[in-house]
Image (cartoon, rainbow, N blue to C red; front, side, top):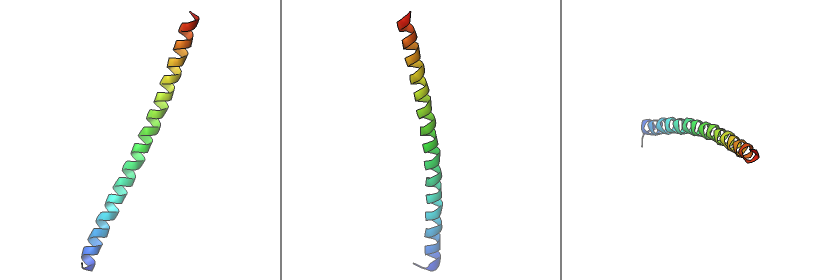
Length: 55
């Protein structure tokens, strides 16, 4: 491989690594948001169940 070939491979590697890093951040953020949503819905369900028990 020539220097130009190695530079091209390195450039592509850096581009893909950056893209994967960004995708990872987006997915982790989505997981956090969905986890919060699930927790909120579980709290509402527990509250509604307790209220129904008293009626």
